[in-house]
Length: 459
Ligand SMILES: NC(=O)C1=CN([C@@H]2O[C@H](COP(=O)(O)OP(=O)(O)OC[C@H]3O[C@@H](n4cnc5c(N)ncnc54)[C@H](O)[C@@H]3O)[C@@H](O)[C@H]2O)C=CC1
Ligand SMILES: O=C(O)CCC(=O)C(=O)O
Image (cartoon, rainbow, N blue to C red):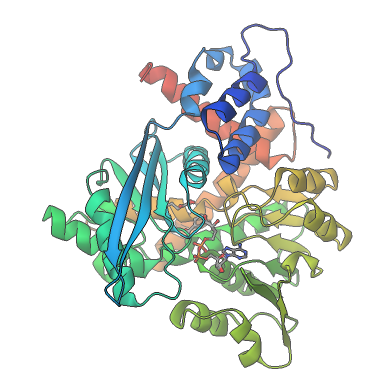
């Protein structure tokens, strides 16, 4: 069903002028287009909620929601293997602690800047609220690129990063995890330095830890697994399932790898993967063990996959996976990787479900194309929430000194993804936009957050 964004134009003076609020956010945060985009999408969803709940129209509420509680920027000096001193920039944006301690990942990538971290932190607040768990929202990272660096260099960088970050984090304050460029290796180095500086075994200070030192079963798999479970829920609403479907996945990192593995387990045929230099098309179905060996163990490029896989796989330098015909598309690499042109191609080729493993991978114009064509669209705030949900399981295990089995975590993750799906679906219906999971996710996240903010006063 075509969806028209309900920007408030009502003369009802109790409803804030969302257009004016958006302009103010743009003015206060110049040069941060990703943050503007994330705020715009949420504000465009809110008019029905503000009409139904005049109490949420309290002056200043949306201004507070769009302004981080705290933004930390710091210098990260370190020495590479040749002894050269390099200086990077570190960030932690603690966006909201209304619903619990700040929670969200760290991204190490050359493109990281304050605006990127703010967009990710803002998204995280709504995602975490939508899960129903007691988690606030934050994000952090650095413009450091771990790619091509030795383990020792990554260790020295992480130690320097944590030497400043430790002042701001803690199991009851702010609990970082991984994101692009930050996996179990980086979390290990960060945790080691935190323990050394503070002289505390505080396992709950980071999630995504190794299994032997406080990590949860399935945390590494959880975001990809969760997104595939969410896509399956979207298919179920149409009386379909993943069995026998052709699936296109972008990326070849943590989220992409475990999306491919889970989709394959559920009988789907995954035919693509990519990195920032190109994509592979594998008509026999992506060999996830080979891909994992190349990307996670050898830390190589995806072109090596086609070389080693044989004639069924083709490497397309600079190619995009969205040109490959598929029933289900799972963008799992980075923001704004699926634009309106790619969405139109997917629609022409008969896609029925698009579910976001990455954060904000689909541009607003592309979402409009997909909605207009009746494609079921799962926004990242909902569809990739399995990662942070399993981080919350890790925190529960840490505080109780427990270690849950994979089966127990898998059952809880599946239940959480079903509940998040149903919450989005029912909220969209209740607020007059059936099938619009963007509106459903944003309003469900907003109403819980706004009610808690009103209860806690102006802070
Ligand atoms: N790791 C997690 O638990 C969660 C991650 N996410 C999101 O999922 C996405 C992927 O994150 P991870 O898999 O953890 O990171 P990763 O570092 O393991 O993998 C990132 C992948 O994206 C690819 N990539 C990066 N920039 C690209 C570009 N410009 N074009 C094409 N490919 C590009 C990289 O080659 C790599 O394959 C990000 O948007 C992240 O914010 C969301 C929720 C949780
Ligand atoms: O596990 C977490 O704390 C956060 C994961 C994350 O960064 C995300 O959901 O985007």
